[in-house]
Length: 527
Image (cartoon, rainbow, N blue to C red; front, side, top):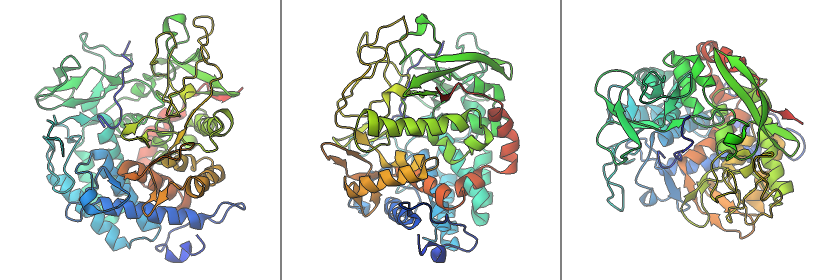
C-alpha cells in the first residue's frame, strides 16, 4: 500500500458590466433577487488589483503574497509555478471582464511567457522548480529573509497548475498561443508517473504520480530514491505519491492523459476512499460502496455518510481539493455520475457544516492564511481521510476552527466513536472556497460572501482578505496570489460563460479525457 503521508501545497508548496466588457463577451444576466452580478464584478476588479500589485512589470511573475498595503516593497520575494499559472488565467478573466484591453492582456501574457522561457528549469522534463524570485525570475537557492538553503524541487502538482494555465492561454489568446503551446509541449508529465514496474518501488495497480523530484542534491534523506521514468540522468524521486482522487493533484493526471503520456488506468489507481475493513479503521469513518472495474482496474467506489449524504471524501475535506480542477475541466458535465454528483454534495456539506452543524453563520473551508499568523489547512473534518492527531481518535480531515475540534463517529464495529457531536469553536472561513462553490451554488455562495464582506469586514482594496475567524473577528489581512487566482477563475466561469473551461477543454482535450472520467459511477448520493 502507498503511504498516506501527504505534502501540503505550500511546502511543495453588473448593471454596467456589459458596456465595459470586450466585444464578444457574454456576461451573466441578473439572477433571482439578492444575487447581483455587478457586485461580483466589483469583487473581481478589486481582486485583479491585488494581482497587479503583486506582479513586477519587468518579469510578469506574481509574488506569492502581499499584505493589505499592496505596496511593491511588501511583496513576498518569492513565487512558484502555481502562482505564475494563476496570474496567467486571471489575466484572461480580467480581459473578458473588460478590466484590461485585449492588447494589454496579450502583452501581459507574453511578458510572463517570455520570462518563463528563460527561467532555469529541469531541461529533460521541461518542469519548473518550486521557488523563484519574482523580481528577476532567478531560481531561489536561499530563502528570502532567512537565507535558509533552498533545494530546487519539481513538484508534480505545482507544475500541473502551470501546465493547465498554459493550455488556457493557448486556447484564449491568439497572440500568446504559440508561446504557451511551445512551453507546454516541452513538459513531460510521465516524468512524474510511476507505473509500478520497479519491484523496489511498487505502487497500486495502474500506477501513481510522485509528489515530485529533486533534479540536484536534496535535503530529504529517506524520502527519495534515484531513478527516472523518461530516460537520461536520474533524479531523486519522492517515495510519496498522490493516491486519492478527490484532490487538487488530479490535474496532473488529467494533463498526462490528455497528452497521452500517462495511461487512463492511472486515474482509477487512486483511492475514492480507503477500504471499509477493520484493517483500515484508522481513517475518518467506515465507508459504504461497492467494487467496480474500469480500464482493467478494480475500484472501491466508497463514500462517507454525512448529514444525509454520501460523499466521496478528500484527504482533508477542503473546497480546494474538491473544486479547483473543476475550474478548468467541466467535470460535472463530462462525468455526471461521479463529479456531477460529488461536487454539489460537497458544496452542500460545507454549507451545512458552517451554518447548521458548527453554527458559525458562514461557510467555505480550504487551506489559507491563518488569522493567528502563518498558514494552515482548513476543511470539514468529516469529509477528510487524513490520519488523526490524537492516538485512538481515528482520523482527521482538516479542521474548520482554530481549536482543531475533532469529529469522530467511529468506524462501524471496528472503532468506537469518540466525538460524534462536538461543539465547534472559532471557525475560519476562506473566501476563495466560497467563490469555488459559486460555480455550483451561485446564490448561496453570493449571500455568504456578502456576509463575509459586510458583517465580518474581511475586505480591503485588493478584494477579500485571505481568511477570517468568525467569532474572534481575527482577519488574515493579506492576499495570496493562488487564492486570488482561484477567485478570478471561478468568477470568470460564473460571469463569462465558463471562459476558463472553454479555453482549456478544447475538442482535442475532450476527446482524450471525457471518455475516461465519464465512464465512472461514484458512490456519492443523497441517502
